[in-house]
Amino acid sequence: MDDPLSAFDVVQEEVAVGALRLVIARPRSAEDLIDEAAYAVDERLPYWAELWPSALVLASELAASDVGGARLTELGCGVGLPAIVAALGGADVLATDWYDDALTFVRANARAAGAPVDARRLDWNDPPPDLVEPGAARDLIVGADLLYEERNGPALAVLLPRLLGPGGRALIADPRRPHAEGLISPLVAAGWSHTREDVRHGARQDESGPVIHLHRLTAPGG
Image (cartoon, rainbow, N blue to C red; front, side, top):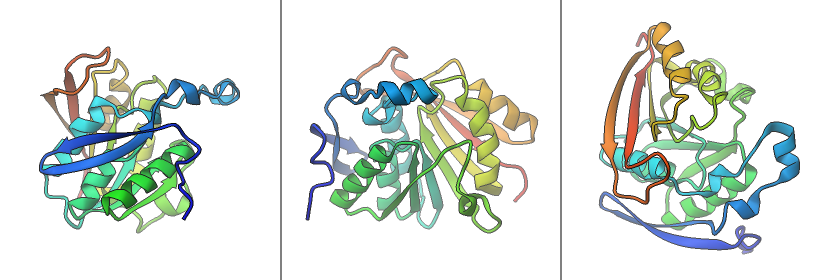
Protein backbone atom coordinates (compact mmCIF):
# COMPACT_ATOMS: atom_id res chain seq x y z
CA MET A 1 0.00 0.00 0.00
CA ASP A 2 1.31 3.46 -0.89
CA ASP A 3 2.14 5.73 2.04
CA PRO A 4 -0.32 8.68 1.88
CA LEU A 5 2.19 10.84 3.77
CA SER A 6 5.14 10.14 1.45
CA ALA A 7 4.80 13.55 -0.22
CA PHE A 8 5.48 15.32 3.10
CA ASP A 9 8.50 15.78 5.34
CA VAL A 10 7.00 14.06 8.38
CA VAL A 11 7.81 14.08 12.09
CA GLN A 12 6.49 11.31 14.34
CA GLU A 13 5.66 12.85 17.72
CA GLU A 14 5.00 10.74 20.82
CA VAL A 15 2.08 12.11 22.82
CA ALA A 16 0.80 11.04 26.26
CA VAL A 17 -2.90 11.68 26.83
CA GLY A 18 -4.14 10.22 30.09
CA ALA A 19 -3.37 6.51 29.95
CA LEU A 20 -2.93 6.63 26.17
CA ARG A 21 0.45 6.72 24.46
CA LEU A 22 0.06 7.76 20.84
CA VAL A 23 2.42 8.50 17.96
CA ILE A 24 1.10 11.38 15.87
CA ALA A 25 2.49 12.18 12.45
CA ARG A 26 2.67 15.83 11.45
CA PRO A 27 4.58 17.90 8.90
CA ARG A 28 8.01 18.94 10.12
CA SER A 29 7.46 22.58 9.12
CA ALA A 30 4.11 24.30 8.68
CA GLU A 31 5.86 27.28 7.09
CA ASP A 32 7.07 25.08 4.24
CA LEU A 33 3.42 24.36 3.36
CA ILE A 34 2.36 27.99 2.88
CA ASP A 35 0.69 28.43 -0.50
CA GLU A 36 0.86 32.06 -1.60
CA ALA A 37 -1.87 31.56 -4.21
CA ALA A 38 -4.27 30.08 -1.65
CA TYR A 39 -3.49 32.89 0.78
CA ALA A 40 -4.27 35.48 -1.88
CA VAL A 41 -7.73 33.96 -2.36
CA ASP A 42 -8.93 33.58 1.23
CA GLU A 43 -5.95 34.23 3.54
CA ARG A 44 -5.60 30.51 4.11
CA LEU A 45 -2.56 29.38 6.14
CA PRO A 46 -1.60 25.81 7.15
CA TYR A 47 -2.32 26.13 10.87
CA TRP A 48 -3.54 22.53 10.70
CA ALA A 49 0.04 21.24 10.47
CA GLU A 50 0.96 22.09 14.08
CA LEU A 51 0.11 20.09 17.21
CA TRP A 52 -1.12 23.04 19.28
CA PRO A 53 -1.28 23.14 23.11
CA SER A 54 -5.06 23.60 22.88
CA ALA A 55 -5.34 20.26 21.05
CA LEU A 56 -3.44 18.55 23.85
CA VAL A 57 -5.70 20.09 26.49
CA LEU A 58 -8.84 19.18 24.54
CA ALA A 59 -7.60 15.61 24.02
CA SER A 60 -6.90 15.27 27.73
CA GLU A 61 -10.39 16.50 28.58
CA LEU A 62 -11.93 13.99 26.16
CA ALA A 63 -9.78 11.17 27.56
CA ALA A 64 -11.08 11.96 31.06
CA SER A 65 -14.73 12.15 29.93
CA ASP A 66 -17.31 9.49 29.17
CA VAL A 67 -17.83 9.94 25.44
CA GLY A 68 -18.87 6.38 24.70
CA GLY A 69 -21.66 6.31 22.15
CA ALA A 70 -21.62 10.08 21.60
CA ARG A 71 -21.98 11.31 18.02
CA LEU A 72 -19.02 13.70 18.01
CA THR A 73 -17.62 16.03 15.36
CA GLU A 74 -14.25 17.77 15.61
CA LEU A 75 -13.98 21.08 13.76
CA GLY A 76 -10.58 22.12 12.45
CA CYS A 77 -9.18 18.71 13.30
CA GLY A 78 -5.67 19.31 11.95
CA VAL A 79 -3.62 16.15 12.48
CA GLY A 80 -6.46 14.67 14.51
CA LEU A 81 -5.35 14.09 18.11
CA PRO A 82 -8.64 14.96 19.90
CA ALA A 83 -10.70 13.06 17.31
CA ILE A 84 -8.53 9.96 17.76
CA VAL A 85 -8.73 10.12 21.56
CA ALA A 86 -12.52 10.47 21.39
CA ALA A 87 -12.82 7.51 19.01
CA LEU A 88 -10.66 5.35 21.28
CA GLY A 89 -13.04 6.36 24.08
CA GLY A 90 -15.98 4.91 22.16
CA ALA A 91 -17.40 7.98 20.41
CA ASP A 92 -18.74 7.91 16.85
CA VAL A 93 -16.31 10.47 15.43
CA LEU A 94 -16.34 12.67 12.36
CA ALA A 95 -13.13 14.72 11.99
CA THR A 96 -13.42 17.77 9.73
CA ASP A 97 -11.05 20.36 8.34
CA TRP A 98 -10.86 22.94 5.58
CA TYR A 99 -7.62 21.43 4.23
CA ASP A 100 -7.55 18.17 2.32
CA ASP A 101 -3.95 17.63 3.48
CA ALA A 102 -5.13 17.73 7.11
CA LEU A 103 -7.63 14.99 6.34
CA THR A 104 -4.82 12.90 4.84
CA PHE A 105 -2.93 13.17 8.14
CA VAL A 106 -5.90 12.50 10.40
CA ARG A 107 -6.80 9.39 8.40
CA ALA A 108 -3.21 8.11 8.61
CA ASN A 109 -2.93 8.89 12.32
CA ALA A 110 -6.29 7.31 13.12
CA ARG A 111 -5.37 4.17 11.20
CA ALA A 112 -2.03 3.92 13.04
CA ALA A 113 -3.80 4.29 16.39
CA GLY A 114 -6.53 1.78 15.55
CA ALA A 115 -9.16 4.49 15.99
CA PRO A 116 -12.34 4.39 13.84
CA VAL A 117 -12.48 8.00 12.63
CA ASP A 118 -14.39 9.25 9.60
CA ALA A 119 -12.88 12.38 8.03
CA ARG A 120 -14.22 14.86 5.54
CA ARG A 121 -13.79 18.42 4.34
CA LEU A 122 -15.94 21.12 5.92
CA ASP A 123 -16.21 24.79 4.99
CA TRP A 124 -17.82 26.45 8.02
CA ASN A 125 -19.58 28.98 5.80
CA ASP A 126 -20.89 26.38 3.36
CA PRO A 127 -21.36 23.03 5.14
CA PRO A 128 -22.40 19.94 3.18
CA PRO A 129 -26.22 19.65 3.22
CA ASP A 130 -26.16 16.17 4.73
CA LEU A 131 -24.40 17.46 7.86
CA VAL A 132 -27.08 20.04 8.64
CA GLU A 133 -30.25 18.30 7.47
CA PRO A 134 -32.93 17.19 9.97
CA GLY A 135 -31.85 14.01 11.70
CA ALA A 136 -28.13 14.64 11.23
CA ALA A 137 -27.63 16.53 14.51
CA ARG A 138 -24.55 15.60 16.52
CA ASP A 139 -24.36 15.25 20.31
CA LEU A 140 -21.02 16.97 20.82
CA ILE A 141 -18.91 19.38 18.77
CA VAL A 142 -15.30 19.90 19.80
CA GLY A 143 -12.50 22.09 18.53
CA ALA A 144 -9.06 23.36 19.51
CA ASP A 145 -7.69 26.85 18.77
CA LEU A 146 -10.43 27.71 16.28
CA LEU A 147 -10.71 31.43 17.09
CA TYR A 148 -7.37 32.66 15.79
CA GLU A 149 -9.02 34.99 13.27
CA GLU A 150 -11.80 37.50 13.88
CA ARG A 151 -14.00 36.01 11.15
CA ASN A 152 -14.01 32.56 12.76
CA GLY A 153 -16.14 33.33 15.82
CA PRO A 154 -19.19 34.63 13.93
CA ALA A 155 -18.93 31.80 11.41
CA LEU A 156 -18.93 29.21 14.19
CA ALA A 157 -21.78 30.97 16.00
CA VAL A 158 -23.89 30.32 12.90
CA LEU A 159 -22.57 26.81 12.26
CA LEU A 160 -22.89 25.25 15.73
CA PRO A 161 -26.70 25.57 15.94
CA ARG A 162 -26.92 23.90 12.53
CA LEU A 163 -24.78 20.93 13.61
CA LEU A 164 -26.17 20.39 17.11
CA GLY A 165 -29.66 19.43 18.13
CA PRO A 166 -31.57 20.80 21.16
CA GLY A 167 -29.43 20.32 24.25
CA GLY A 168 -26.36 19.52 22.15
CA ARG A 169 -22.99 20.48 23.55
CA ALA A 170 -19.84 22.14 22.27
CA LEU A 171 -16.41 22.02 23.90
CA ILE A 172 -13.91 24.56 22.56
CA ALA A 173 -10.31 24.78 23.80
CA ASP A 174 -8.94 28.25 23.17
CA PRO A 175 -5.58 29.76 24.17
CA ARG A 176 -7.14 33.08 25.20
CA ARG A 177 -7.46 34.45 21.69
CA PRO A 178 -8.97 37.97 21.57
CA HIS A 179 -11.82 36.91 19.25
CA ALA A 180 -13.57 34.36 21.49
CA GLU A 181 -16.49 36.68 22.19
CA GLY A 182 -17.40 36.55 18.52
CA LEU A 183 -18.49 32.98 19.20
CA ILE A 184 -19.66 33.17 22.82
CA SER A 185 -21.77 36.35 22.84
CA PRO A 186 -24.15 35.48 19.95
CA LEU A 187 -24.81 32.00 21.33
CA VAL A 188 -25.45 33.22 24.88
CA ALA A 189 -27.80 35.88 23.48
CA ALA A 190 -29.64 33.06 21.67
CA GLY A 191 -30.18 31.16 24.92
CA TRP A 192 -27.15 28.89 25.06
CA SER A 193 -25.52 28.23 28.42
CA HIS A 194 -21.80 28.89 28.75
CA THR A 195 -19.14 28.12 31.31
CA ARG A 196 -15.38 28.53 31.12
CA GLU A 197 -12.63 26.57 32.82
CA ASP A 198 -9.04 27.81 32.89
CA VAL A 199 -6.60 24.93 32.40
CA ARG A 200 -2.85 25.21 32.84
CA HIS A 201 -0.82 22.97 30.57
CA GLY A 202 2.74 21.73 30.56
CA ALA A 203 3.14 21.53 26.80
CA ARG A 204 5.35 23.85 24.82
CA GLN A 205 4.13 27.40 25.19
CA ASP A 206 3.24 29.64 22.29
CA GLU A 207 2.66 33.39 22.53
CA SER A 208 -0.60 32.86 24.48
CA GLY A 209 1.10 31.41 27.56
CA PRO A 210 0.41 28.36 29.76
CA VAL A 211 -3.36 28.74 30.23
CA ILE A 212 -6.06 27.37 27.93
CA HIS A 213 -9.71 28.37 28.21
CA LEU A 214 -12.11 25.44 27.95
CA HIS A 215 -15.46 26.83 26.81
CA ARG A 216 -18.47 24.59 27.44
CA LEU A 217 -21.57 25.59 25.51
CA THR A 218 -24.97 23.91 25.59
CA ALA A 219 -27.76 24.56 23.12
CA PRO A 220 -31.20 25.42 24.51
CA GLY A 221 -33.88 22.74 24.65
CA GLY A 222 -33.43 19.02 24.91
